[in-house]
Image (cartoon, rainbow, N blue to C red; front, side, top):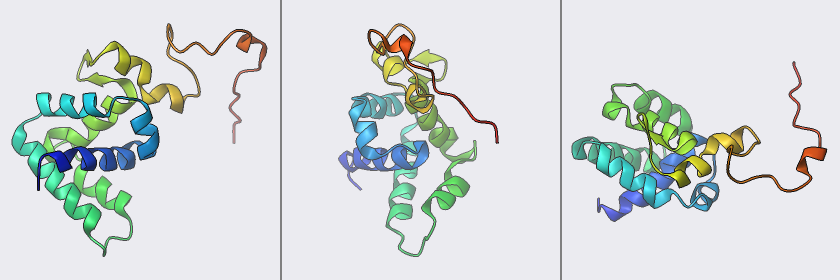
Length: 140
């Protein structure tokens, strides 16, 4: 498997791990930055095995529930030194470990979209938005 194919696999597995579409992830403008972040901060052997196994999983026509297979094979803390969990955290918070990747990663964190809000100090909702009622959560 060629290294440049890892970027495509990174996008595909990121969509599965985060629940956001590939288009939504690309729209953040963070794909290349996040891919380079995992390359810089993860053991090459873990990355190679991770992407090899992701490739096999995504191309296995017998798997009917890819999300379940992904959860059972990739989400254990010991699997690839926690790479799948770190990818989720990276996309949602813009952090790698205790470090913010960049100011853009903070602003583009998926946690803001998931919470239907904006990052404090950035992406303000616009003049007069305060006049609209906030999103309410119904208790079931």
